[in-house]
Length: 163
Image (tube, rainbow, N blue to C red):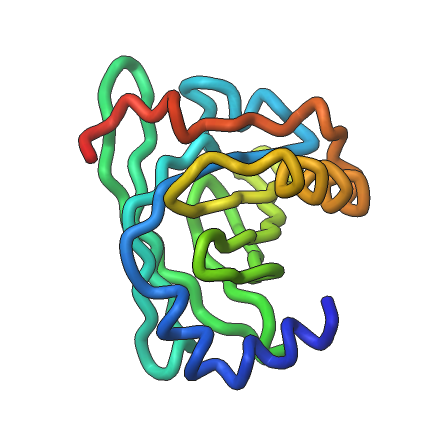
């Protein structure tokens, strides 16, 4: 992962850019049922905060199930490799920031649910819809992670939860 974005640009700059209000722009998964409307991993991001020099990453999001939006915050803890975070949500999750710009943050995640089903996921958070070039790059990244590009869901305009 290009030495994890050169150690996330010395983490200080990265922390300043990662914290704040973000919206889920797109999600991709190899098990697409997990990210369809009302899917347990269709997360509508609201805020990301860092603690302890970003060794703790808190992500606040909504999940829309049974016609109701539930606000949730998960706490990810940086692992010994210095690149991945681990949290518990709908099973065990390991995730990393794989790309970060002022406009978007791309997370790659692997979830193992309570039934031991493994799902590879990509979450793109940002403030605006993806450009055609960003969509192409997301499709290429999905293929590199063995996620079919047809399993990419643009969700920014479908968020039914409170802003």
